[in-house]
Amino acid sequence: MELDIGLEVAALRRLTTAQLRRRFAEVFGEATAVNNKPWLIKRIAWRLQALAEGDLSERARRRAAELANDADLRLNPPRDKPVPVPLEPAGVPAPSHRRLPPPGTVLVRPYKGEHIQVQVLADGFAFNGAVYASLSAVARAVTGTHCNGFHFFCKALCGQGGGR
Image 1: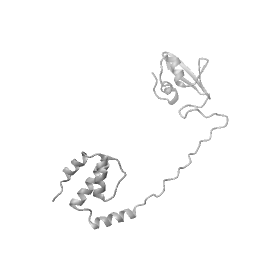
Image 2: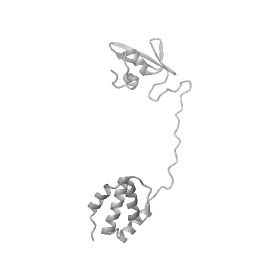
Image 3: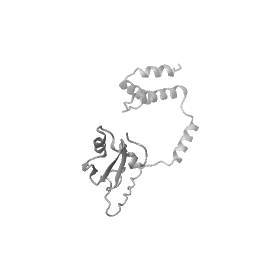
Image 4: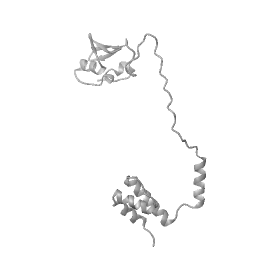
């Protein structure tokens, strides 16, 4: 009796995961701990097709074994390489964020006909005699609305257009 793989796969799709695991055990002769329904359906369908139409030839099995033996397989995961830490010039504190210039830098940004000047500090940003914790806080003080401070000052920071 010939097996209709299409009907078998359709029947497999209607089974629950527990039923698929039992069917897997019937077809493969061993249990599985897998609960992935699509994977179970594919594996069972493959096995049913191999049983019905024949498996790989002995020649194909030998060739697959040769290819597997020739492959350079990694047995251990690669070791983590230490990340070099760039040395800061003496007397210049490191910026608090990699996108920000070093403390002491003055950012200038035109806004509504004025030039907004913000000084980068080691622990914040100075604007109009006040110290703000973030560029977004400065941008809010300037515009009166919430906006991304880095984006607002992007022209001054990265030489590109940006801001509102």
